[in-house]
Amino acid sequence: MTPHLHQRYPELERTLPHIRLGSTPTPVRRLAALDTVGADIWLKDDSAFGDGGWGGNKVRKLEWLLPDALRRGRSTIVTVGGIGTNWGLATALYGREHGLKTVLALIDQPEDEHVRAQVKRLRDSGAELHFTHTKARTVPTVLWLLARNFSGVRPPYFLPAGGSSALGALGYVETALELAAQVEAGALPEPSHIVVPVGSGGTAAGLSLGFRLAGLSTRVVGVVVNDTLRLDEPTLAKLAGRSERLLRKRGARLPENLAPTTNLDIVTEYLGPGYGYPMPEAATAQALSADREQMTLEPVYTAKAMAALLDMNAHGRFGDGPVVYLNTNGPR
Image (cartoon, rainbow, N blue to C red; front, side):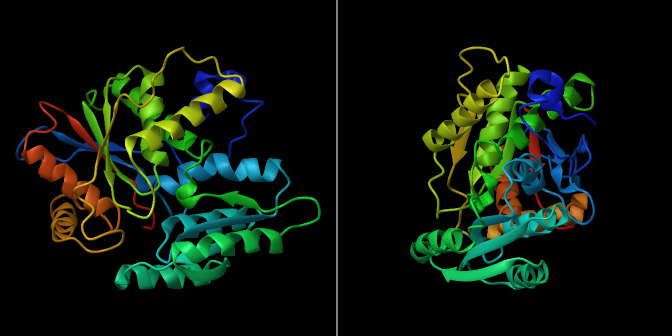
């Protein structure tokens, strides 16, 4: 299928390269077994995005980031994440398919069965791993890795955590346009809110801009699950603004005065003790989702976002709704 951004803004075809890594649209369905109180809950299942054994929001971002690295003639990607990073693993796997080497600087996070399995996947991915342990040690290590992997006149292609750059966030500008098309086709009613985990900010920022472009009044509720990065509304507003400016620079004829993040709400009370730490409410949400809706969530991002949604819905925070839960889980 032609990318939605290229459909809507055909002038971007020449200036903004894209590689299709997954199938769209990702499915939507009502989660009737979970919306026993409050607003109706719907699922947009981005765990189904991505070809092969991988889905989730990371792949949507890589559809825009990988072709940019190739366009610039880079052979190596350097990026960062926790030792259980889905982002780093997706970059390594999809980068390898397109001839790109991935170098990862990995920061410690609480270890459990999920994280230990992920470290094994990272070791098997072909990526070059550097365990930096702390955020303070990561910065000089990344600078060293960039210098060490300099190839001729071309430096490595650096990507921030989660791929949350102005370019990477376009994956979720496109997702908002996709959801708007599903609303128009009658697959679901127009949502009053969409709930997403916020680990690096690109998903929420892209959605907020995308809904403005689509003409939907849907509010983006970003559930912060990472306390190692600044992820407040002004920070995500700046990211959405950079994505907007990138689209204009590449030739997209966007409406004026978009104010892309006036539809964004950031909530922080569902983080628990910190990034990667377990939270009883998240474990309950994870079990309920599996038992009642056969939906697989993981404890670091998606279970905490579902816990937030269920609690906020029980307290009437979404009004009449409906509210959409965006499942951004990766491995499947």
